Length: 341
Image (cartoon, rainbow, N blue to C red; front, top):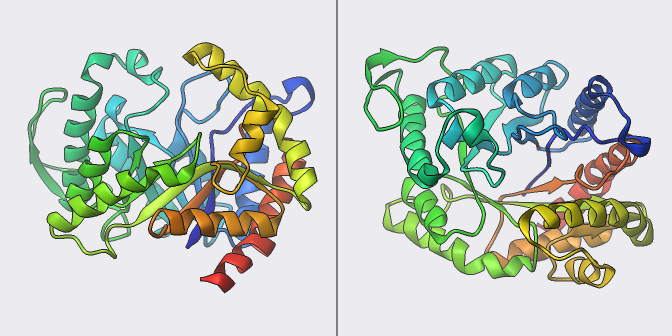
C-alpha cells in the first residue's frame, strides 16, 4: 500500500493565523521535501479558489516541489476538471511529468467546493455534464498525440496535436469521488483508479460503492490489478495517542464548526469527535501503532486499498507539528504497514 499526504496549501498557519502567504508556501515545500526524504510515496495538492488556501495553481506548486525532491510521486488532489480546460490540464501535468522525471499524476473530480464554477464562467446546473465531457477529452488527449473531438462546452479539436507529451507512456489519471454511486460506476466502466474521499462517519460504509466500482470495471473488461482503490481521510500522528488528540481536536472542531455554518451541519462536539477516532470512524488520529492498525483495518473493510493519503493541514496545526507527523509516517507508520502486508 502506498502512503502519502494531501494538502490544500492552507494559509492559516501560525499563532492567530498570522503567517504570511510567502512563509506558508515555503513551509509547504519544506514538508513535501521532508516527505520525500523519509519515504512517503505520494504528495497531493488540492485545488481551491478561496482566501484561506494557496492551491489555485496546483501544478505550479507541484513543479516547485519536483525540483526539491527525487522519489515521491506528485499529484493533484483533486483537479476541478469541470471548470478547467482539459488541454491545459494535460499540458500542465505533462510538463510536471517532465520536470519530475516521470513522477506526476492527476486526480480529477467535480469538486465539492464550487467556487471555481462562477469564477471561470460555468453553470452549476451543468455540474455532471461538464465533468463527463471534459473527462472524455482529457483521456483522449492522454492516450493520443493528435486529437479529434467535439462537445458542448468547448470548441472542437480537428486532428490537432497536444504538446508537450508526458514522460510516462500513460500519465496516471485517478477519479476522485465522494458518495455518488454514478461516480463509482463511471470510474469502473472507464477502468480508472479510484480515489475515495471519506471525511465523515464510518469508513466501512463505502464498501457497497467500491463493490459497484469493481463490478462495473470487471464488466467492462478490466482486471483487478487495473481497478485500484485509494482512500483519502483526515488524520494526524503524534508520539502518543493523547498528544495526537490534544494537538488535533481544537483546530478540527473550529474548522468543521465553521464549515458547518456554511453547509448546514451542527457544531462539532467532543463526543462526536470521539466517535470518529474509534475503530471504525473516519479520522485516522493517534500514535503510529494505532494509525497503522486503523489504515490496515480500513483497507480490509473496503476489500483492499492500494493507496492511503492523510489530509492533515486542515486543523490549525503548526508547521512543526506537521513536520513531526510526516517524520512519524515515514519512520514508524509505513514500516508497520509494510511489515503487516
